[in-house]
Image (cartoon, rainbow, N blue to C red; front, side, top):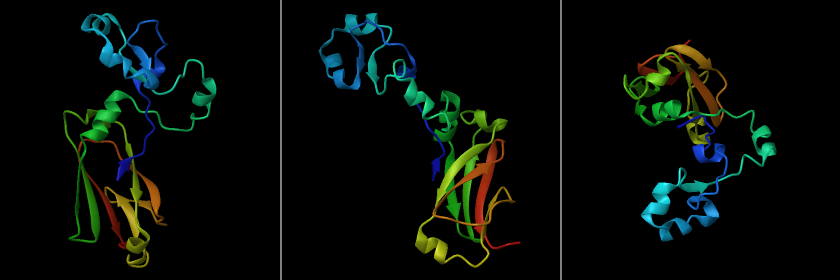
Length: 162
């Protein structure tokens, strides 16, 4: 399972400078040859993946994507994922009180991918429930599930309960 996301590195959103350590990915190897003074003296040191300053079409073409900030990224990265098969199929997500605080008042979205074989072996009428509430009734190989806001334990259950 992966969070539904589209991220961009902070350097990609920062205007290019004239400092020698402000390089694109193509110039990444140059950083190894620079002195500590050159690297420390540059407010930006790293590799840029895309030039957003001169490429506004790139931004416009991705307006439909979910852009994720640092706090949200940290919350997804620190989510604990586990599963059980005791009563159907359950995926549990634990959002801790420290690193996952972003989800305290905001819902999260996860892409749930299911193999054809798994879906074919599910009982007829199986649906997806997020925290006990119906989230999806028609299962496909890939679907986005929204988990309600709140810290602590959340569940995604695939079952045929009605």
